[in-house]
Image 1 (cartoon, rainbow, N blue to C red):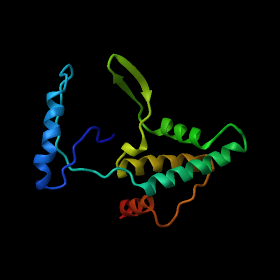
Image 2: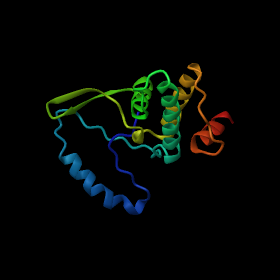
Image 3: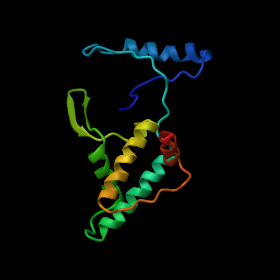
Image 4: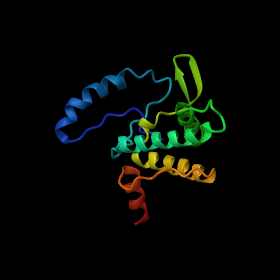
Length: 148
C-alpha cells in the first residue's frame, strides 16, 4: 500500500551519497526476517491538495452526522473513513505486537489517495451526503486523467 522504508535517488550524482547510509542499514538488519531490496520508480505521495480536500470532506460528513449524534467530530470521522477503506496492519516493535493499526494518509501515493477518496466519495453519496468537489484540485485533476 505504501512505499515503506525507502531511499530516494533523484539523479546519478546522488548515488554515492545515498548508498553509504543504505549500507549501514543493511548491515544493521537483524536478519531474523529476510531483507528484500526492491528497485522501482519513485511515486509521489499524496499531495496537500488531496489531504485538504479529504479533511474538508470529513468536516462535511461530521456536520451531517452531528445533527443526529452530537458526539461525532472531525477526528472521529477521519478515523472512521480510514477504518472503512484503508487496510490496517500489525506493527511489531521489538517483542511487542500492535494489531489493527491504521496507516497515515501521508504514506499513500497520489493514486492510492485518489482511490481512497473515491471510496469515501461513493460511501458519502450512498448516505445522501453530497460532498463538495472543487473544480481545480489534485483529486479532480487525477479523475480527469483517468477518464481520458
